[in-house]
Length: 353
Image (tube, rainbow, N blue to C red; front, top):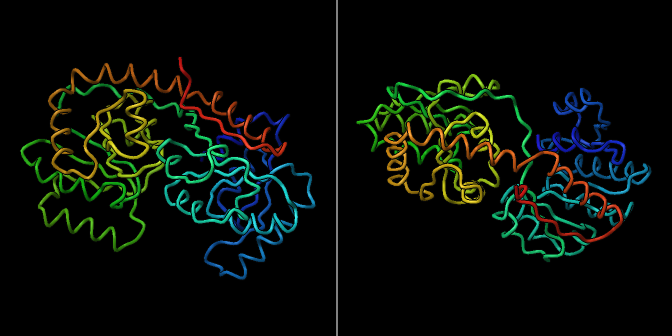
């Protein structure tokens, strides 16, 4: 979705993208709807090493034969095969996104022969950038620009019984879902109801999550909504949002909560803690500390009436500073420098005013 933001907001008179992606990709229809050229030359990961290698080879040959000035890699996980073949065939400069902690560690493990044509690695937070051990002259950090989703402001609820709290995201330990169960054990005397919106990556993880809720006798406090696409509908009856992810790189749902005007509680670690501190928005609890998480939930419940108005004002300021136009301007600077073969380092943590 970040890539789609770039492709749909970039100056198309200056920059023309062709997106190479796997066959039968669901992303193809989005590109088609927005008039963006694409070629389905890659292979899904499940198709085996040899099939993937041949697909990368044919893709690189296509890049070499086309009028392309640079290669923009949207996920660093594919850097190695593309870079090796690029060194042998097309020899074009590369701009590479590093959007997750796993990608940062992956980049660190690569040899200079793989990274030599990359002119800048783009991180989405200082948290991710700090993990990269490459030279500073090739490190850039851009907070994501925010594209408003026309989310209506959620009105402050007069009743706090039940007190509805939403957690958006795939069910996993790293996202803090299991930590929330531990915190909920301290909250049985309060009218909290947690709405879990998102699927687990496997049936085993979902079963484990449900079993822990039942074992702690917390069934009345948790509502599993599964994967949902209508964010507005999921948010409209909520009092607040909790995002207990331990090492979230940026946290776009933090921005969505801000647009909806829903007070949020986040972990003080990773990109979420960084965003919260940088913009002075939301409450923070000590990462992986279930007792502090429950204490902060109680505090926000007790002060809900007073914090809601202030939160909405600060949220609007943050979103104004994360203008999509400013983000795209920085991205265009990176594209231009990379296309000319220049190493570049740009930082943007939102507009200053």
